[in-house]
Image (cartoon, rainbow, N blue to C red; front, top):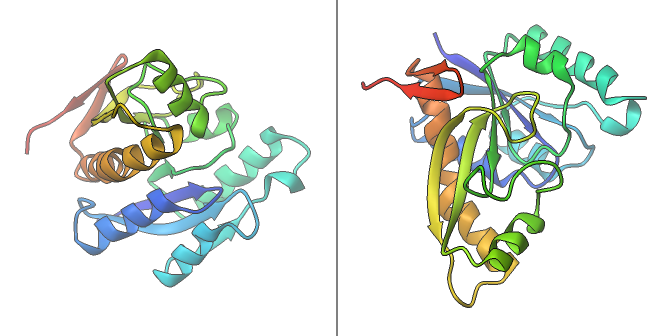
Amino acid sequence: MATNIAVLVSGGGTNLQALIDAESRGELGGGKITAVISTKKGAYALERAKNAGIPGYVIPRKEFDSVHTMTVTLVNKLRELNIDLVVLAGCMTIFTEELIEAYPNAIMNVHPALIPSFCGKGYYGLRVHEEALKYGVKVSGATVHFVTEECDGGPIIAQEPVPVLSDDTPETLQKRIMEQGEWIALPRAVSLFCQGRISVEGRTVIIKEN
C-alpha cells in the first residue's frame, strides 16, 4: 500500500519539486504525492503539481475569518483525500491544533537551519540566514521535524549540515542550504516515514535499520 502524501505550499514550490523528482526516481520509499494544497491562489507550486500530473487544491488563507476555520477545512479535505502524511514545504501558515490532533507524528516541516539554532516564531525566509551570519556560525543547514504545537519545536527526523562561507550573503547561504540541505533531507525523511522506519519516543525520533 502506497503512503498518500499531501504537500502544503504557499509559493514557488522548490521543495515540492525536490519531492516530485525524488518520487520519479523511486526514492520516496513507496510514498506517492497525491495532492498539493496551496494557501495562496496563483502559487507557482500549483504549476509544478499540474506539470507532474498531481491534483492541486487551493484553500486560501484570505477567504477565512480565522486560521482555526481554515485549519478545520484543511483537515476535512485531507481526510476526504485519504492522506497519510502531510508535508509543509514552504507553507507560510501556522495552523491550529486541529491539524496536529488529526495527524500526530505525521506532519513534517523543513526549516533552513540546524534546529535548535535560528528557529521559532519569526524565523523564516532570509531572516534565518541573516541571523546565522550575524552570529558567525561556520556550519548551518536544514532540519526536517515533526510538527507540534510549539513552532519549530517538534521531534527532529533528519538534519543536513551545510558549510557557511566567509563571503556568504543571506541570499547565497539561503540558496546553498536549499540545494545542499533541504532538497536532500526532506525526501530522505519522507522516504523513512513511508518505509515505516520511524518511531517517536518523547522528543527523540528512532530510525529503524532496514
